[in-house]
Amino acid sequence: MVEAFAVASGKGGTGKTTSTLALGMALADEHDVTVVDADTGMANLLFHTGLDDATVTLHDLLVEGTATDVAEATYDRFGLSVVPCGTSLAGFEAAEPGRLRDVVAELASDTDVLLLDSPAALGSKSAVLPVVLADRVVVVVEPTIPALSDGLKVQEYARSYGTETAGVLFNKVRDDAADVAEQAERHFGGSVLARVPDSDVVRDARRAGEPLLAHAPESDAAARYRRAAARLDVRDGDGGAVADRFRSAVVPDTP
Amino acid sequence: MTDAAGGRNGTRESRADGAESTDAPELRIPRGTLLRSRVVSDVATTLSRALDRGLTGYATLVPQETLLLEGDARGVLTFADGVPVLAYNTVSDSGGPDALAELAVPGPYRVELYAVDDEGLAAAHEEDALRVAPGTAATELADDPTLADRTREAAPDERLADPEADDADAVAAFLADDDRIDAIREQARAEAAERADEWGLDAALADDAGGDVGSESGGDVDPETDGGRGPEQ
Image (cartoon, rainbow over all chains, first blue to last red; front, side, top):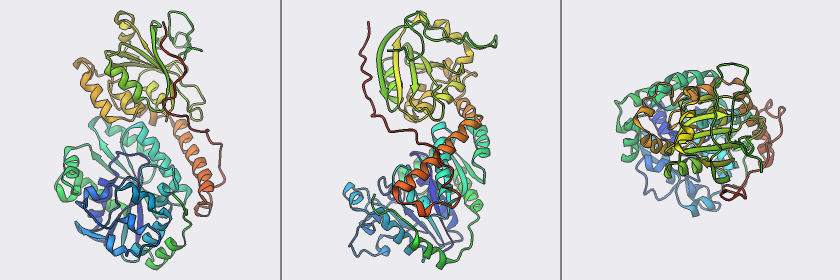
């Protein structure tokens, strides 16, 4: 295990799942990458990876008393290990978010890079958990006031839990907003990973149920995500220590 | 009940004539007819209503978020045929994108919607300094890209080509306001620490994260609570 990243935004619709998978696929050239849909209330990853019909998901791993093995909910797709989350309300209600720590610890022992696609909110224990557990956070924002406000908020929450910012990814950037992204960099500090333009190719990939880098590997957006992944500068860590940290992390016991 | 924009019973709804600068923009519009008075959790409700009925008139918007703005934002947003034209903050005297940026805080808002006849707004709508791009209010106040698209579709061509009104201007104004950004961060830090306590996550807090805790802004207000005022006149 090298490092765990939470990909977070604080609000929906910023392209978090697209970004998680794009960064994951780009990092998979050099690392073993596992992508987890940590948004247990609004699962999305399965639709982006053609796993709509997945029979075992993270929900099953988060239910007390089931003997489901983590491997059963892990699918090899697009060069990644993908742990999707289910979409049923019953699955969400039965899930105990606190068990995410154990799942993450187990996954961490068997992968290089862990990407946690995080919930689009900060208002519950389960929503902040990925940010608490991760080593670093990737903040995904659109160049709008609500998204930037929420991005700043996520960054501050992460900092409160000792989770550093790996960088900011500006998504859905229109031509007239290029200057805005530059201006925003000042406030977020750290590295700006990419400015990804608003484009049809991203929407087409989502509709096709494929990650962007599989659907349109030659697109400008894909190239920008590859550069963003390179800028993450994944750190070599002590695998055993990281897994132990997850196991000992303080986590909530109820949703 | 006091008029949300600060006017009282007169024919002028809001004004900027107290500003020291001689070239400060002014917003002078007739009071019009009150159509609706509500507390809304989401301004999209109001913008969508104005768009769907092709309203010519204005909305007064008072964010209930007082921590960031110290209670000093009261907005007026005018419409022509349902499409936003001007934005103005009657407290700070900011206009256009600057006013929208000041008003773009999490809800709820107290909103009043007024109808004004076309001629009543014609002069005001010539004030370029207060103008905003058609879709900006939906994007920045309501965080609703679909409504923004719908609004742009309804806007006349000349509004879409207006070089004085750029969608990104409000975002630029927001990012230029360092005090506001600091306030967001400070509030988030306080909130994170408070919730960590509530959720039993104290032990996971970083060592230097717990000391700087301010007060919380208060409880939520129910969405769409009727303000208790029906249509007037």
